[in-house]
Length: 339
Image (cartoon, one colour):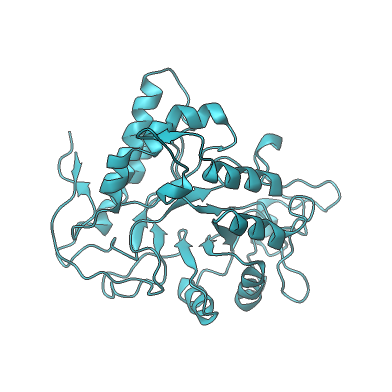
């Protein structure tokens, strides 16, 4: 069983006014991981997700409501937007030389040009700024992804923190997920550069670091991954939920707190397979766990699949779960008994 405990702790984190409650939104990876033709991340896929978030045709409590109205108005892309210099796993291109994973880690792969600017896959994203502007026109915040895993920049490949931030801000993005596959893993530097632009940017730290227990006030991100990569199975869900425990159970106060949230990964609600009612029961339990442990609620289902959205609508819009997730009483929920 998991429960919230009442322990006072100061609310400190990346101080740009964002992430005071656990972040909500949608991110592309669990629906568009580039592992099959139908799962390739594209401009069209992102626009479909944006429209799905603002779709107000479904009801909550008898009132037509969109996901955006419930706080999920952050729509973010994950890996797969960039143009690699090689044909690599998850991004095969017969027009390019083929690079193995080992060759990428040896320094052969890059998604930057000779001047250090990011290269966008123009076939998938013909106009990145126009895409971000489209999201903004719908009243949404739009997120991007850096330090990529597809086309890993490793070995002796130089880092390009400044050029990446310059490009990112010129495109108009509002949120960034910084992964840990490439060499640009200094989240403090990322935060300093984004803050120096004067625009508040929501920062997700994916496996680069976690708050230092000796310096808990130093948290240059709004959310940080507490465990491994999630999968659409209940065993995976339980494992990720357990990963949050060390960030809540500390006599000195929790490391997961307003502005600096432990994050057991994107939600798989809507992606489970198997027979009913077990599938829906497990997905509801998954959503309840994320709500109780004060996790960011980042949806990952295909929002253009109306049947999937219909099936989980009552779960992802449950007002009681959302209220529990947003309520802060000095401690995130944590394990109190194991059976």
